[in-house]
Length: 501
Image (cartoon, rainbow, N blue to C red; front, top):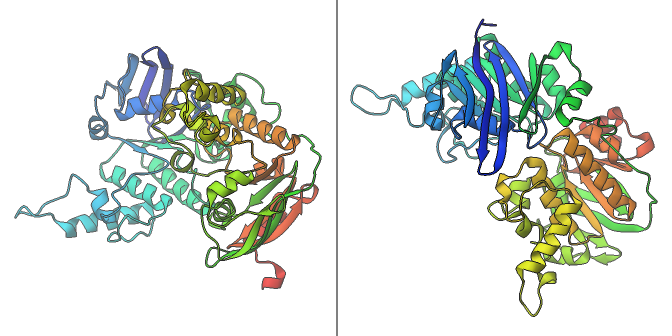
């Protein structure tokens, strides 16, 4: 490590009108180290990062980069100073090649003033070799995996000789192999002397990758510790200001009659011969590796995607294929994996989002009053403890955990018989995870059937009464709660059943 920090923020403040987003942002990041930044949603992590990235300007406090006081007024200034931010979902130009994306806005030219494509390609090949990745420099960015898009953003940062790289929830949508590749790259950048900030809600990754961890809570700095000198329990206590007594507060519920019956559902090339039942009071976990077809089955059951064979029944009645409105009327609800793109109208207010699926029910004589909409929205926002200053707060400005609560509120307001929830706690903090788990347990206790899709094995084992496992578009196991273990679930997710071999 170097003697002076690459980045130093001390008591940085930022407010938006009367809303204080950052009360005391403090972090010091050395070169040659990977520094974790953790905290609940709404703790101020994103605001701090946006100040460093030049999207926001601080109101007060100290901001130094490589020992010099700075105050960026644009992202261009931040990048020019050697700061690169790698987001969870990179924004590349899809129609341009990998090489063109890396050199966008700074293409080298030949002595005749033309873009030197040969030099660009050679430099990209050198970058990828240095990072240890195999990506075709000439292929268009469209269709690349999130993991490969992130590698391209990292290559761009390295080509700009960035001294500080900030990775904001980079692993949320990656498979295990992709995560390990990203970690290998991060460690190599650290070994070159660069400073890295790693933001994540996954403590196993924080402890596997990082050297130091800084904890934030309610817009303020709480503590910094060497990873070797702290524990998950200690970090959680600092994050939430209280003990999380039970991350998976699963309450026993009486399992009743079959509610959702899926029989021989098939979509060629996507999933094959899927049959399962969800009963009243039951939480059924749907596990499997990324790409196994779990989300596709959920979308087909709800009518978003068509299927070629099979039936879906709710309380004994067939739910028509390809008709989400019919599924809603029948009593199905789907909380999608991508809450921002598929679950929210991000530019609309919290109240409008919550009442989106029940507006017809709220109308009188064909008219929807603001009073009726606010009454319904306020009830559900209160029940799910959505942290917002007003119902007209734009959904895009909420933390990830509160966005998830708004999507949940929207669908629970329909009073469904069966709730399908895809990745219920992806990208949200440990405190909110516990709240979501408690809510799911309460809903099951009231007789609702729940189909929960999750890539987090502890969540599946902690919350499900039964675990269904998918592999390559097929169901490979149906395991009772008492018999479900990490080993037999992963075995079913990675091995074809005996009769299929």
